[in-house]
Amino acid sequence: MSLVEFLFHSNNIIFTSAVILMLLIAFLEGILVVLGMGLSNLFDSLIPDFDSNIEFEMDSGYSLTKFFGWIRLKQVPILMLLVIFLTSFGLLGLFIQAILLNSLGILWLEYIVIIPTFIISLFSLRIIGGVIAKILPKDETSSISTSELIGHVAIITLGKATKGSPAEAKTKDKYGQTHYFMVEPENENEFFLQGDKVLLSEQNNTVFYATKNLPEKLK
Image 1 (spheres, rainbow, N blue to C red):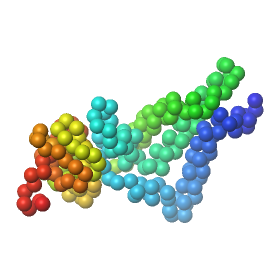
Image 2 (spheres, rainbow, N blue to C red; image 1 turned 45 degrees about the vertical axis):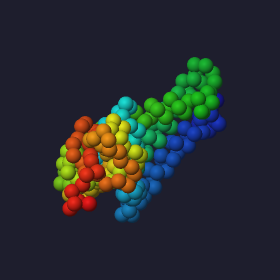
Image 3 (cartoon, rainbow, N blue to C red; image 1 turned 90 degrees about the vertical axis):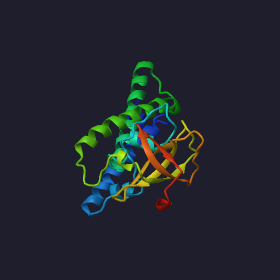
Image 4 (cartoon, one colour; image 1 turned 180 degrees about the vertical axis):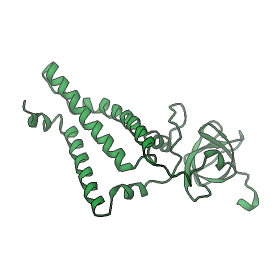
């Protein structure tokens, strides 16, 4: 089997397409940068602000915020993350298929290879993104510790929060940046619904405790 036949075989086309898409994005970004524009800033502006340092924990409530933080979103430009993922996914998938072809003489159906390739690519994205995040210059002038959010009024954005079962909430810091995080009631008999305003009173690792008993001046 020739290289062209291998790359564009029906069982490899999704991996080859990922590599081609990555090259097109990189080429387009290069042209736009020369012209004084760029896709990266546009994509980054579409993502809401949140605390990207929240660690992903499998035993805590499901939250897209945690997943976004885990893949380094907001630590690394989203376009760069997309290029990393497409490169990892495409090349890893083709590498696995090449090994199978050389050792077994067959190409597995793409949907069999996609799942492990996708999972490994996510971990590759986190690792490589972490390295890049350490290299990229950071603007520390407007960053705050999440503990400084205690005393702020937050709004429940997703889910229902009960004691031991947090929901997603958001608030703005003194710089006007929006932070997304998990919050649960500090009292057993309280619960929060989407749209409720709560007062952040304490933080335990990645979860905030709050109450709906807001002072009159904060209502």
